[in-house]
Length: 177
Ligand SMILES: [Zn+2]
Image (tube, rainbow, N blue to C red; front, top):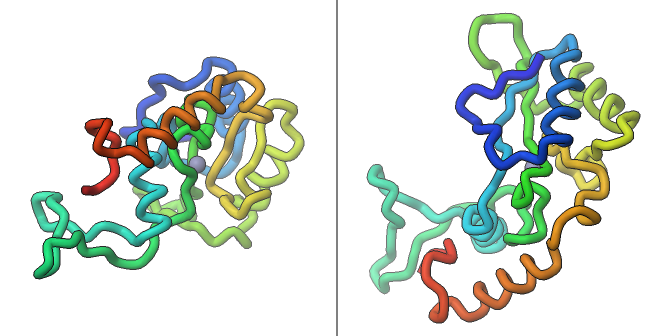
């Protein structure tokens, strides 16, 4: 079973959405989608936090700053690709988590030794149009097989890299000041 909760299916490639929905609907395990389409801006922010540490924020989501005005950061965020290099940017990836309990509500369980996770790895491995992030250490990530063949990722990535390297030329690129 697959549960989307508040995650939008908007901007997902139709074939990819069909394939991943069909596969997970047939699963005897319950899978919750935690992320689907991701903007370039959000990818840049996640990448920045992966490289430099998560930005610490107050209750209003405003970044905290030290006495010198520098943004305060915590431990490094989860591994993430810079904008343009992630299948999420093209609507060709989702992230899922296993519901590890029959109790009501979602009991997120990332213990990849559980049978559910092993089922997922094998089911995607067998699927002709899906690829598992397992191969690069990201078990919850499911992407379209060879998605780079279908999208202008190189130009998108290079344009974004230029923007990231010249932040004063661009507004709203998503990197903390
Ligand atoms: Zn992912």
